[in-house]
Each structure stands twice: as structure tokens, then as C-alpha cells.
Image 1 (cartoon, one colour):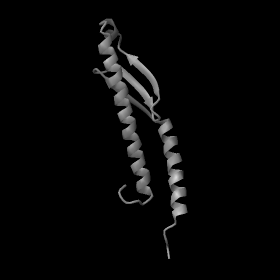
Image 2 (tube, helix red, strand yellow):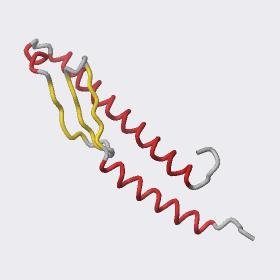
Image 3 (spheres, one colour):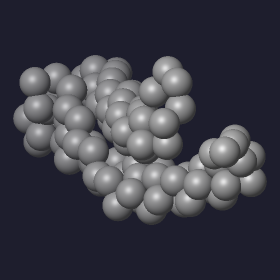
Image 4 (cartoon, rainbow, N blue to C red):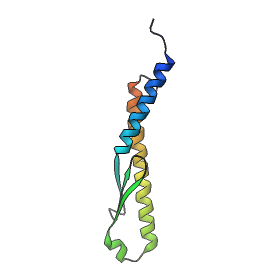
Length: 101
């Protein structure tokens, strides 16, 4: 009789978690704000890899606007990392045959 084996399920969950961490570490997300005035790249661990700022934004001298654009781009990048994580997690959990995934 094929019973429920908690140890096997836990081992599979651990393996899937390790795979997810590796995949997210290799993931690079790009996000923009201000119509492309500020672009950020962030990895799947939410580490900021780069920021590009259009020189025209700097020329305006509006520091508050630039700060807002950088904040918006970083927040968008973080949101996209969360989406990628959720998408990957759902795919992996679905493969485990768990209800609700």
C-alpha cells in the first residue's frame, strides 16, 4: 500500500528549496521608473546590481524627483523579484503534488 511518507516529502521539499535558491540567485530583474529615466537591475536575492540614471534627469537639478524615481525603480524591481519567486515556487510545489499549488 502506497502510504504517506513524511520523510520523503521533507527531503523533496528541501531539494526543491535548494533548487529555488540557486535559480533565484541566477535571476536578474530589470525595472524602470519615470519612463526609463531610472533603470535598476536586481538579482533574485533582492541585491541591487546596478542603477542607470538618464543624464537629463540629473541636469534638471530636481533632487527630490530623482530620489523618488530611484525609490520607485527599486521598489518595482523588488516586486518583480517577488513575482518571479512566487512563480518558481508555484511551479516547484505543483510538481510535488501538493494541493493548492
